[in-house]
Image (tube, rainbow, N blue to C red; front, side, top):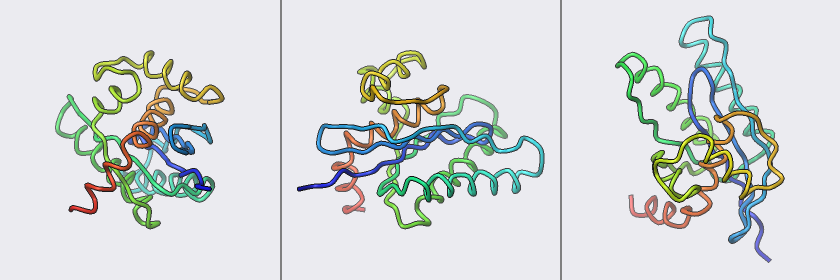
Length: 168
């Protein structure tokens, strides 16, 4: 009898970092938990990144996922915003990797296509499809919905991701 694989999806951000945890057993997906981390907006960048790292660590300790998936961020803003978001994304990658978890990365368009069927889906479509695919899901906000969508995407693509890591 095979056991479900617990997956955490992380939608990185320094103001709001979404996380979503699911169990995946074959084609069956089960909702485990989701939420949004909101590091303090005051303090130095280092302090804010530390708060994000600490909060993600608490989520990882609480839910004990076996695999992680993080969205590759597309930034259409200025260089400073891109740099800050990149640093938050670094923390999102580091937090599970430091615990020995394999971490996959997915482009936003692939996440949307995997969950909604089109790479240009809007936030409302993502929310609706996540709730359809995970009927017991209890979450608030687009960041948590996006994180669950990232976890769902990984559940669908994890075998391919494992092969790519093995080849690297």
